[in-house]
Picture 1: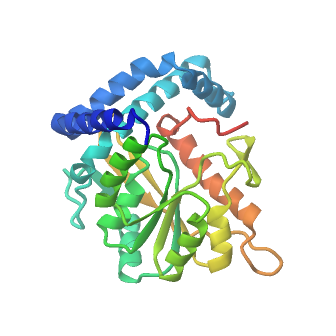
Picture 2: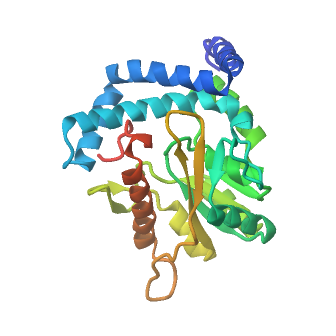
Picture 3: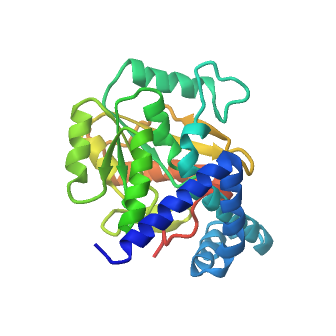
Length: 295
């Protein structure tokens, strides 16, 4: 343990308590305001601007800047929404107009079908809007779920975030060498397994992503090949600059197959990334442009 860990842990807990006291609207709004002001001063902003310009070469520089500003706003809100998930997620099957989470008939029917007819299912998501919500959706609808997550580097921060996640999500499986085995066992138990798959994976197949070659994570496609189970996508769409969202669950995807009738991993990875690219093009300001997806 680092000598700074106790201090960092105390600061993290204090920060979470302050955000909690500010409430589910003021807390994320404060985070968004800070991110819009400070984000453009960082190296990550240059990366974001380069990525946006490369993905949308037909749009002008002012449009690129607007997308980056919205992306910083979204990131600031998302970071401050962790402590308010229990208040943000107020969706009921009645779908009252004042609820923060909206779903259409097809999405609600999909969630209820997975709950009432449990079966091994793979669900992919992306760093769009608040990307924690697909995992929250599974737990809140009573699905037997397992979620792959990446642990923050700072141990005190990781522990604080993990404590919040445990209250909102199903089984949590940390990324690492044992993750594929644990995810496969979860599928064997008939669970819904969810993961975010839009980040760069250096040892993965090369796909076309938003018009450029990028290395992608083949884990979901590999699991689909091994278990031959249902595969769906799930995303949140932020409704304006608020903590209100529309959730969408896709119909099962027909993944490409090879000559033996098994899921073709490179082609399936491309198909999954095509879905995510379509989501990003619909709401470009809600994606996490600041990471090096292309190298």
